[in-house]
Image 1: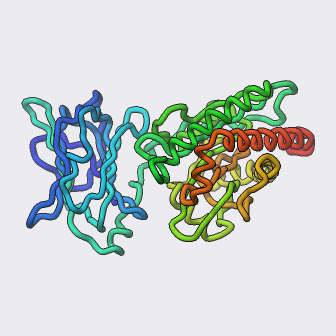
Image 2: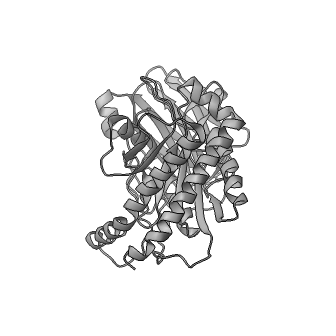
Image 3: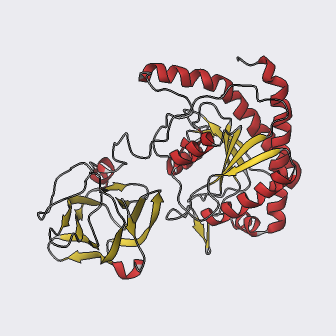
Length: 402
């Protein structure tokens, strides 16, 4: 799907154009989705002023996404805005600093026929119009995907830190509670993945800080959205020594129970891991190395060299975490060590793992995540795993390339 941009005139554009710079906070002033008898489905949004924007569709699950720079959604009522039988639900809110997002869950495949923003030359007020029509499953899938925009949410490059870490310096651990804000993650029985992993992450931070051995940084401390690239960028900005992403997913078929730990791999270790990474993942990320002035081939070689060190370190961390969880709780997933291509694990110079605390689709795991005693045990297990890894990693430092 191509990118649609800001319109600065009285006519309505129906072509793919690039977003242009503007400033100021636009206010939502009304509108929503309606079905037209002969012209499909329309989204009309009244805004206090024109702002840069883009619209695209995503598949599995089917969604229409509209990004703005920036819209204040105060007073917006998602139910009142959804007057279409083709829209199953709406979410809107902050997407990243300076940007807002509206997400519409589609009940059937829809194609974007026309999109444009009309700005009044007299008042500066704007109206966004997006016209949708029915599409085939194959056509929708082919047209869906994030717009190709190299400047969208690109983190600032940072230089690779030298090893080993100075003696006596505390390890910097970045905890990354998944999802948040307009992205609740998996949901069941009134609980969302975003809320559950944030609560656990804050508790784990306290457990780690009480050891006096670590500095702990959170990618988010509230219910807000942080992009995948932004999470990795935050880890580099903090000078992280290890990165732990926290999730509690759900599966549509079968039954899964217990914690598992993922490390990065080009190919997933199994079909379930591949499907999970597909839901969490977006694009490959070039981050963690200062690659300014290097062409793509050189950049890839540099990243591959860095991962020769950190791939084994990440796998060792995963193994110690699984041992710590098993010792603390007596149970992990039947296949606790797994691999997949998660974007949040793609930092070339930071040992990184993704911990699935459990599955909201399994009642026992959901009950555990709501239980403060169980969470305390899980936090203790992760703490012990980190400590065991840190001792081993320090001993192996002298064998690594400097």
